[in-house]
Length: 140
Image (cartoon, rainbow, N blue to C red):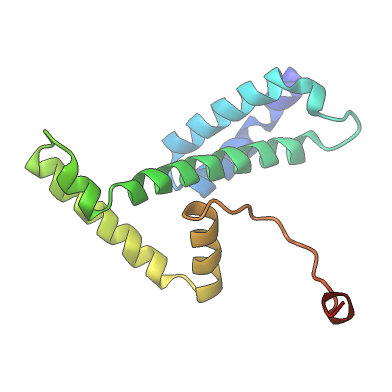
């Protein structure tokens, strides 16, 4: 398995860099994904596509990182920033600017994507489809 992962590295790096927007961040994600794959090798089903499994691990790591970053950003709301003692003015201005940029990017999303983003990141919901109940069952 290890050798097969090594042959996939160029593809994995391209995928991770594309997700993260940075070759350096992509490399960090690939490193974490390789470590996770080797630690959890027993979860891979022989006969299935190793590349698909690795891409899924990378995607999940990237999403976890984004969720964590968003969570930190949301917690640094204006009230929290004024309550934080000992921060430098320069850092506070930088954080406020980052928060404004994030809010602007979120506002630019289509309504459905914005809704899903808020439900998952702010409300802690899972991005899992729920079965739709038919009208006849709900009337009972």
